[in-house]
Image 1 (cartoon, each protein chain N blue to C red):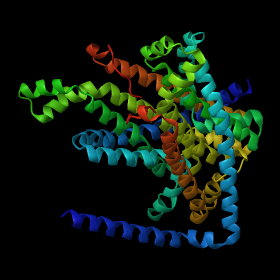
Image 2: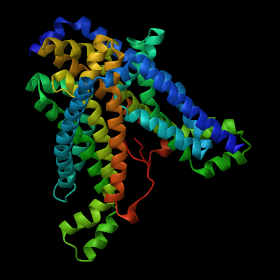
Image 3: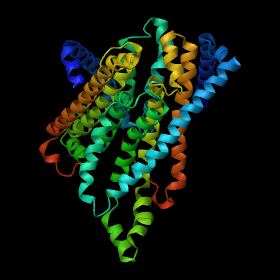
Length: 222
Length: 247
């Protein structure tokens, strides 16, 4: 119950750090969508490019997060941005690329070719086919990718507290440094609740954006 | 045109290598590693890191496979959905939170870190084992039954080989996450390559930092590659396919 006491006593700090956490992750996800979705769509036009891009994203994903922060630190400190929110957001954007690109790519590739043919037969331009047929059909799978990306980002953003990005990781970092059990548990619980909540919310969103006719027999790519 | 492109590409690679070399020298990493004491220390930390990963992964693989196999047996099959849900929920919990919680209950040290890594690594393996075995087509099992195979033989000779691709993907994800999380184990006093990284950040010493970060990345990429090779041994020839991994 000491943990609850701690949370009540430090309610404003809890809110502040939670907001900071959400803010970092949202900025990163927003940028990652801007980069990832167009890339995912672009690479459906060339098999070879797709292989290369996905492999590169895979290597990024395999890189441990704290090691990536470490590598970026000397590089970014040339422009005086080694610590703080900027490197954290850059790292998160890089990590989000794999789920977003891969899911966009698979989703667009899995649009039944007869639908595309039919649309073309109606005289739609490639751009309109993309906008009115391929993207709406692909949206649920793209959202599934975003869900993976968001949950992962929340976890990595917690580690980013060690490079001074703020967020809920601060509670964990300072709690460990002071062996302050209540603080550690508060940080860990809040960050876990945030991740589970976002996961649930995105799952709901995924269901909402699925066109009704597609709910039967959809294969989940998560 | 193509030959020219190839030449340009090679030129670019060489220039990149030179740039990386100069960069590392400027940062001081080469000087750092030419100090015999520091090199030995980094190797020692790497050994610690690998021990941590090896112990926790061995335990987690056994536990994950066990959970996956038990909950796909006919008796417990009803529970598979619930277990899958719990595992999925557990996977959304951030790694730093797991490490921190383990520390606040078990105190600091190597054992705590191994325990936290073990718990965190079970999830992807259990999940993929469940998913892999569940997705073995029922007609295949019917055929095996029709041939008079016992349940144990069906498990070993039909279900596991067919699920191996998915299980191995789970193992790979788990291993890579484990290596990354083991770098955080320094925070709870278990050593490992994270020590170089965190100390490097705190002291703002890029050489020390890179001496931890680069081996960690190489370790992760190397293990990723090794598991891919493992697939050639473990997956029967007839069953190999170029499927996309479910993450």
